[in-house]
Length: 241
Image 1 (spheres, one colour):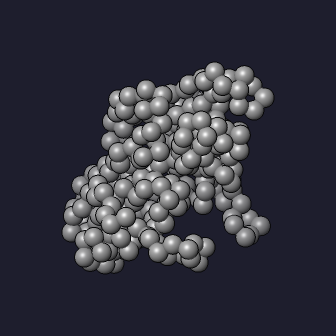
Image 2 (cartoon, rainbow, N blue to C red):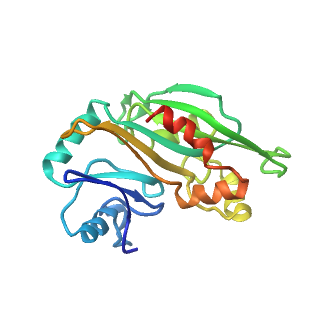
Image 3 (cartoon, rainbow, N blue to C red):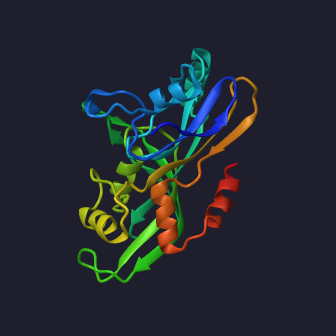
């Protein structure tokens, strides 16, 4: 991989479309790879970049960097003050509620304390396949729009697992039978979760920005397989724009 798709760039910030499987930066847990979004982007634009947030390795979509330290610091403040609206797309097992606020505290990793965790869920589309996966004769799935209010590690994956509607392709909190069905029958082995958009007020220009990623490859394949039109996303994107 030599280049990342640039979604937005000015003198302060740059947003790219991170593909599924790419780490944001170097980490001890993945010493087998030397490909990272930070290093690729730095070579691509020939200047230093500063990570503002993270996406899990298997999560695709909008990833934002600062082009200087002050930009990263100012965006970090907006993030902590919850002034950045984040939206994700995912495919979940079963029929999810039409809309729900998931207010379910999550245990902090390595510590015996719970942290507030809140996610808004909106169901965009449902589908029932005439395939026996597990104990039922048909398989039901929901395309969901997720808006995390807080930003805990694996929050969306854990919240969907808590609802018993795990995200397809999630090997940690998901359903192995449905993961295998998508991997072997639908030919989509990836985690079906992507960062769709980031919305915030630019910390230098005060311009309201809505940075939106096109469908990631796994979700694009999903839409094609089920003959879903991308127009079903436009209404909810406009609502949050």
